[in-house]
Image (cartoon, rainbow, N blue to C red):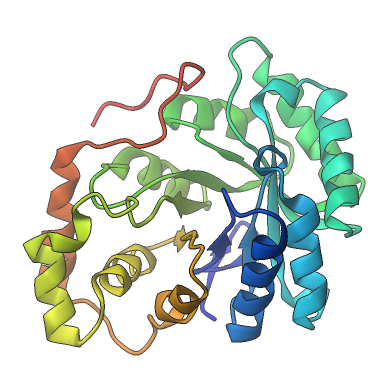
Amino acid sequence: MQTVNANGASIPVLGLGTWTLRDGACVEMVSKALKLGYRHVDTAAAYGNEEAVGEGLRTSGVPRDDIFLTTKVWWTDIAPGDLERSAEASLARLGVDRIDLLLIHWPNPAIELSGSIRALNRMREQGLTRHIGVSNFPTALLAEAIDVSEAPLVANQVEYHPYLDQTKVHAACRAAGMAMVSYCPLSRGGGLFSEPAVTSAAATHGKTPAQIVLRWHIQQEGVVAIPRTGNPDRLAENADLFDFALSEAEMTAISALRSAGRRICDYEFSPRWDAA
């Protein structure tokens, strides 16, 4: 599996997102993904499935040291003290002694960011996580987080797909040596797979529209994609991305879809997003 090198972290460019996966189905998907060659699994305290993810890791038979495991602290729990307790509870639920990447899931304007970042650093210093980062941080907050963190942040996990322009966040991540991790990388369908830019490339390369879109992600510098699927048959399809490359014209045509400006995950507690 190809990796992105980000401030000392080696992050597999393709991971399994687990949001909405639960119980036995989650165990099965994680285990099968790892048996198929995935080496990156993403979860969060808020997903309510860390126990199942941990069980999937163990039943896969893949050595723990070969797996890049990410989890996240929910936005209501990022105050100093709360963040440490949340991270320790995640470790217990996952059944592991260390996480590979611990993220602040969302910023919280009611909690001073510097305190949250210091708490995140303490988790790294104590050896409970190898690397630290953030999620859903627009460029201004990302710059602040980078400025106050003693250890380098290795990733900003954000919604990213061809219908959403994240050029500014991507540029900020690259300037800081960070990876940008794409969640909802396939835009949950939403007509994306019928776009001529996607279907034309699929016909040219003999690939599915989903494979074309995922290839578009990982062909960008420093971008990691974590598609979520509940269909075991899709796992192998989503991972079959490394025997072809999109042309510059195909990349440009797919990137032009960003003008749609469609954001899927936007909530009352969301930060002020960067203007396109």
